Length: 130
Image (tube, rainbow, N blue to C red; front, side, top):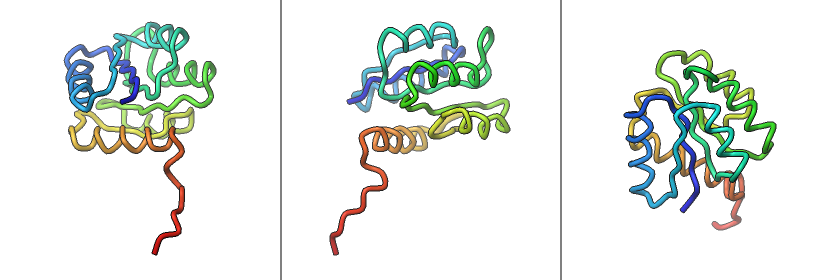
């Protein structure tokens, strides 16, 4: 089980993604915009943050940058359905993975598991079994 923060201004998307993650037994927290998300992250670190790139007030790229300043080891997944060319910028700023909306449940599950493995040090470990 991981502590996951979802930052997305779209209520339906935020709750749909949250329900999928809660079904996987994750402890899910929600923020309707980047300001609230950054404040939540300052108070309590999360194992993973999913961030929408297109939001009013503070866009996802700025949110990623601010979370990265708080915690250089933060694990983030950037998401967008409107501005896919910004996904590369999100990775440059610190997002470990990117997703295009609408996010398919299987795609979300794989991305989350992959990032959580990275944060726990399992990716890139070579086991000498033959």
